[in-house]
Image (cartoon, rainbow, N blue to C red; front, side, top):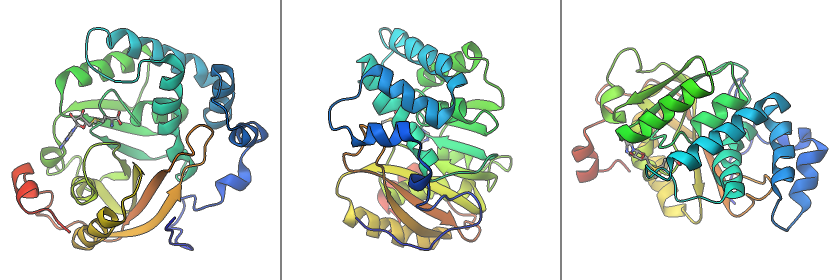
Length: 269
Ligand code: SAM
């Protein structure tokens, strides 16, 4: 597992300390090799997000599975798998990002992952969900209203366009995107939204040494530095998942992001 140690940008990036802080419930669950029951998963949620958040997570699951019978939102339809592979997987970002307050962007949020679980767990965060497909944005807006969430916005649009709008450019503390594109494209989407010092957290799974090298080359052009390759070890998720941590070390040059066609024709990296 690759890692770059001793890279702790001020404040938000938690480096590798959180495991030492993990509670008994999380550690006991980690030690189990069998599948986790729903009750065990909820116990872990309580530790990570707080006991008051559980009704919102359960309502989000109910709405997701209900909407999914009419609108194609997710291939995961087993209720316990939703808790694990959508909700807990989203919350794994909290293992590496510990700021109490942050302006957060989720690019290509789909049905709202990881942005919605993060907002439920950290109500004081200001969250923007960005999604190119209208029916998914409709679901996000339904959830925002149904759960009574504040300081969260669901935008129907594309990263290539929104990043050139002054209200959004260089204005975020944390940018993330799960299962949206390859690393050079993700970094070209994400960097223009970052204020200097901001973190880009990209969940990934599997072998990606070649993609990571391409990502590092793209990062140099975009004013971004690679910080860490953080293995996820939350219960039920210790299957090769990791979070790639990047930092915006200087402003992203104004010409990025390019159009989708230009990115496809000549990817950075
Ligand atoms: N992040 C969600 C998740 O992990 O469940 C959804 C992943 S889904 C595979 C990728 C999503 O990214 C799609 O909903 C797609 O519409 C959206 N997307 C792809 N390119 C985008 C772009 N340039 N700007 C905004 N959304 C984009």
